[in-house]
Length: 335
Image (tube, rainbow, N blue to C red):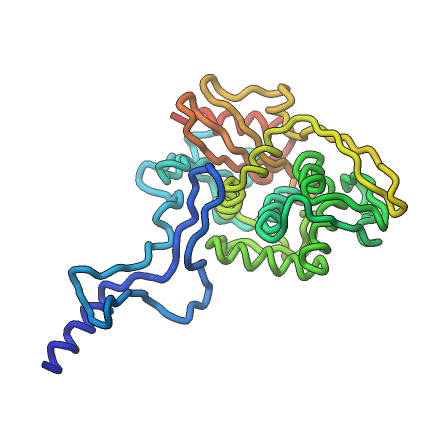
C-alpha cells in the first residue's frame, strides 16, 4: 500500500507543470493571469488535488507560461528575408497564431528611447483609474536638450487620461515623470514597478531606470521584450484608442486652478499619412522613439484584411525615413 502511494506521488511530480499563466493577446479588453511569472519561484511545479485524494485521471495543472506567446519555429523567416540592414533589431509577430514571422537579433539589449512609454502606460493603467488626479512636482522641469515636453510646471494638475494622451501621442517626457511620481511615489519607485511588471510578463531581457526613455545607464529592452510589453498594453481599450488617435485637445489646470490648453498630434507617420503600409494592411497605431543613442525605434499594432492583429518592432534604425521604409518591408511579410 505504502509503495503504491509513493508511486502515485512520483507520477504526480512527473506530470506537474510550471506554475505560471499566459498573457492573453486577443486585443479585446484586459485579460488577467492567475499566477504571474517569477524569476525565482517558490515552487517548481503545480498540481491540484481534489477532495484530499490524488486522481491521476482527473488531475488539473497550470497552463505553461508560453502557451499563447509568439515564439520562433521552423517557419520563422531568416534575416535575409527582409531588408533590415540599417536597423539593429526587429521582429514581426502574428498575435493570433503565436508565430514569430520574422526576427533579427530579437534578444539583443538596446536603448529603447520613448518606446519605454509603452511600459509606463501599462503600469499606469494597471495601477490607476482614468479620472485619477495627478499633480506635478518640480521634477517635471526636464532640462535635457532635445527632450520633448508638454510644458508642465510645478503645481499643474490633470487626470490620468489626459496624461496618457500626452505620454503616448506627443511622447511628452514631463508627462512620464508626472505619471511616475503620482503612482510610484518617485521615478525610482515607479521604475521598480516597471521592472516587476516586466518580470511578470516574462520580459527578462529588459531593465528600466526611468519612465520616459531618455538615455541612462542600465536602461534597455530587446525587440522580443518590446513585443511582450506592447501585447500586454493592447489588452487595455484606452491604450488602443490613444495610439490610434491622430489629434487631441484638452484643458488642464495650473497651480491656481486656471485652465491651461493643451494640443497634441501623433508622432506616428503612418497615422499622419506620410507613409503607407503594404496593400491589405492597416496600421492601427503604435509608439515611436528617438534619441542619439537609441537612434530611431517603432512598435506597431497592425491588422490584415481579415482583421487579424500583428505586432512589429524595429529598434536602432539609422534614420527616421529608413525606419519607416524598413517597417513597410517588414509589414509586407504579413500574409
